[in-house]
Length: 185
Image (cartoon, rainbow, N blue to C red; front, side, top):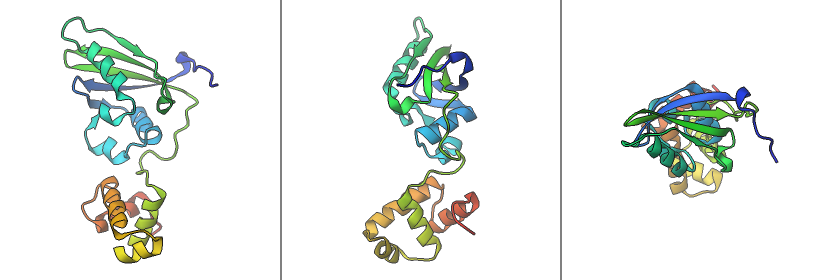
């Protein structure tokens, strides 16, 4: 059983959220938790609109947000997440800002160690294999044969890679992967 973290020694992260769940400001600590623990694509946390629906067990967060942004008698809310996917965050305070926004203050366990570099996309093992073979100039049929998977599975992994690397084409995805250090030069 894990000991309860000391709130006075906790790392604090802050983000502001609109009443529809859209996250309107995020600090780097929140990005680290989103990317490393909740495996959210780092590209999305930097370049795309973030939303509470991207966070596991978001029903509790939405109910706290509704209470904090209520038109009649908004009130601060304190959540103590129990779900294991919230492991680094042991308390969330939700404070009313306006009628349509609230501030989330996340208390992060100081002993929490992020899993890897949060500026790089988290690729699955198979996506890394497909990326490596594609960067070597292999066609999708050759990749499928080499990995003993179907061409539609290769297409799915390639599509996921393009999304994670913010690319429209496979060539652009390979170039982005080289720039991010995901492939040897």
